[in-house]
Length: 102
Image 1 (cartoon, rainbow, N blue to C red):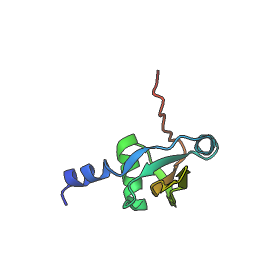
Image 2 (cartoon, rainbow, N blue to C red):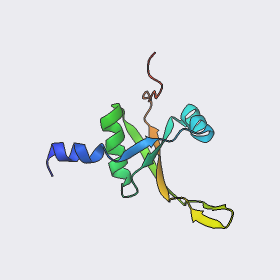
Image 3 (cartoon, rainbow, N blue to C red):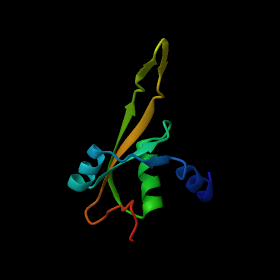
């Protein structure tokens, strides 16, 4: 796989930042950021994608499979999709600002 193909693949690994109260506290306390990721992505893929997209150095990655909840509306029973998220810890001196500089 050429370098350009590898970079294109890495651009599809991170689906979105997962911003919640818990993830905001983790970011403030531990320099940890939470992302929704492609279910087929590995920790190594996530590390390379974050370093490529945000120009930071990643210390560690923890990947978690999240099971979808069972939902019910009247007699209709359904289920939300399963998905995967990653907790990315950055090295000292690096930060990601999702809000922008201004």
